[in-house]
Length: 303
Picture 1 (cartoon, rainbow, N blue to C red):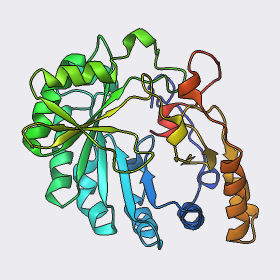
Picture 2: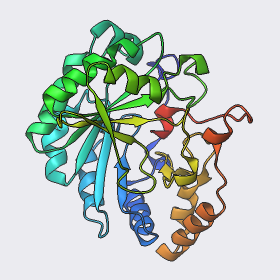
Picture 3: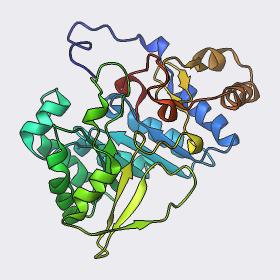
């Protein structure tokens, strides 16, 4: 969350304006009736939400939720890992863009330390939580960290996913010249670790998979800039205060909170979701450059 916006004097939303755990679980319950099987808790930073382990337990108990994951910056993961696993979390994704302390500090902007993140990853694995690491690669900033990250993840038995720098939101100063493409990243990794492309496991899988030729694990590549996958996107995003988005690059969401608080039955909520999804026409990544629209920030909407 950008310090220049969310400084010491920032007034956060009152509790009544954010979705309660009951409302979040109701949303999951209805979505499952429409075919959703995977749920991810993201942010901002989900481990800042008070009682997050209780929310995990409630969502995990919804019949039909086959995969419950969380994306976190990992800073608080050491403290929460055991409780999250006990509550029913299936796996965790940690955002980590560099191992070098100076590069990491420039990219996170809040004074966090790499060691805290690495400790959190190890703690998660020790309690039985599978871990993936997401690394957003930005030219001129951290492309030199790709191979050190690959080496560390191979040594730790962690899957690394390399992500093209995307124009999410309005404040990250995105420019196409800063994008290290999927092809370039595969080439960089391949200089030291020969790769073999693996087949996708299901339609809509966002990362292409590349196995190490020596059989010791794999990496993933997310290429929404150079190889958009809008046509296979099946993700619906819900913000903390109940706006619902059908695209990561959308500027405004529909008012799910009002629906949840006025609907007399889950059937009404289901019709709301069905109508929203059936009308969607999102193709931002495919139309990038041909259209202009304000976009929600990553710190607000999650990945």
